[in-house]
Length: 162
Image (cartoon, rainbow, N blue to C red; front, side, top):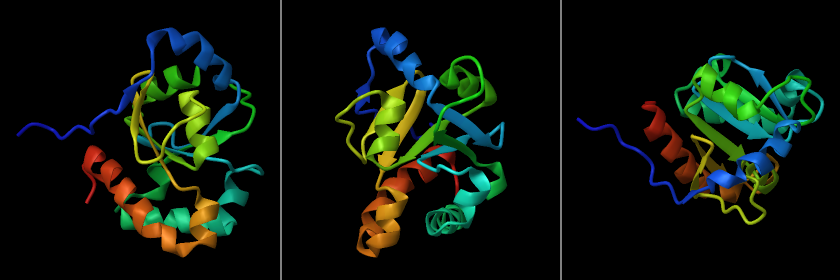
């Protein structure tokens, strides 16, 4: 049986590669080194502080609903990176198969596009990227969770979860 692939709405132009590298310095990779899923979040203060926040607690519940072990998830934080080299290259080499960006800032940080649209799958340097509502908005406005969950189900299908 053929493996389901998300419909890629927009492939970022190959000549955007050099421009995208400017973002690598602002993306810090954390969590599992061999994660097939990486979540992109604005989490100043580090991973432990983020996990203890209401947004981090909601993300843990999302992982549970996805039948995903949180220890096997990678994070991309919107903060200066101390690592050298291209973040996208490191993610591809480590086996990242999908990026899930929570919020417009996270989505535009990885796509490099100012007008990135949530719910749309982008191909960003060979890695599918899907944007959904920010965790802060989901915490503050629970009525947004249903639409976000529909978007997250695309990731569940792509990674063969559940």
